[in-house]
Amino acid sequence: MGGMDHSRITVESVANLQGNGKRLLEDLLGHRLEDNQQVFIMVLSPGTEPDEAARREARLGVEATFRKTEAYAAEHDVSDDASDAAIEEAMRQVRPRKG
Image 1 (tube, helix red, strand yellow):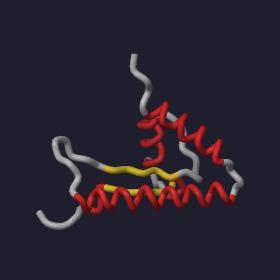
Image 2: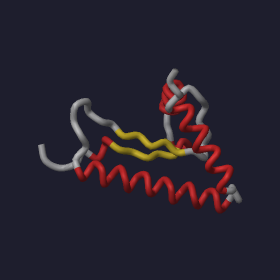
Image 3: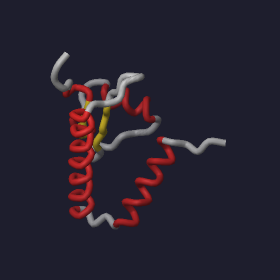
């Protein structure tokens, strides 16, 4: 099957989530989402590696998210230290330490 399936990667503002979408993501993530946040979702098939187009699309999505985050931080005077601390806390929640 040719071409890239663009539905495998999405970046969406929480404020734009409709219906039960926000609640579903909150249940999955285990915490409340705020309207000023964004979610980045990438669907991968087990046993397959993303092709170059999928990798490029994911990279562009992450870069766009970083640009929006940097603009938000500048607009709301969020320091780099506060931003780094928030990222570290998010990483701890996503990947709890083992043992």
